Image (cartoon, rainbow, N blue to C red; front, side, top):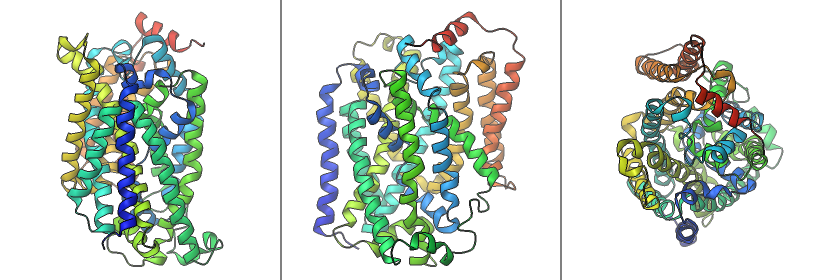
Length: 488
């Protein structure tokens, strides 16, 4: 299929708006603090929307759409619902701690506090492993949008990846966090519009509002179940723990949304807004994906279900709008990741690698160069995504399995109950988790819960176990913990 003029115009206008916002935002970044944490002046509603948009990508319409097609409602139960519960349930804990770290220690990267909390070696291990992990994760997001464009518009994978990647490079490199935040807001509006259009047209095709409940009778058995093997209750439990680590700051860009808030109250409000969006919006977003087996029975490749659904449902002229919403979902997450990874490289890695970066007078220039290079690396991974097990393999198996061990010291390190867990506990837990992943990666385990969650579970046991063997807490850690308890 080829896109008509209206479709092409919608997509071009979307990309132009992203570039223009990036260029305008260039002038809001006077220094590295503006570039990485918006000067600590991010309004709660913008932070909340950005936190939500940055937490998912176009992979939802590829990898997650495939699960919705083959297994039904369980897709909501193991992704959106636990994410919402985790964010809302911890809204007065982790957002507050991240704001206090910026206020008390002037951090711009989520990892800066680790050099005091543990030591420089721990900080570097977390930084390097996290950066390498994010190269693959962001690469998977580019690949997802490439797949959708190939199905819907016949555009080659390479072209789709390069177009979205290059536009993102422009607005992120120029605009920094302000560029990311403002484009997140525009992308959120576009995504809502595109998602609502798909929802309304699918409901209308199925016979009206009654189809929202009646559709489940036409779907294969098990599609209406909360848990549908291999996505069992145990798997959802594992994902709860993974999301607890990732959405509270294990995904570094999400921690940045809290760090950039002006105070604790604003950060908590941002978290609650993001959580409410996760609770409600996916029910509308996923409905077309759940209905897809009725409209498109017998698809050989479920990862293409949303793309074929667009071709089946949308009239000419509307496809461009929904494609723009898919771009928005992907670019919102990837640009946020890129900006925060650049902060980690600039603030945590480069000063250790070379002394000339410790008091860098050209910090803003360094930040932009780092941003540019990292984004290029993710595009290279995207162009070779099949070698890493496809999109679902990269996101669920690689990212979920490896995020836990690398996020454990970062998130647990903020909690006073784990104050005795020092550098030995942190490093041991990371190594144990990575070894577990390497050993089990090619093994056929009895459950997906074990396959995804075992590295994180082993990492948690080692972290806590080694911490219990430690009898004293260093004074510098006590002082840091005391600072986290301070209120304005």
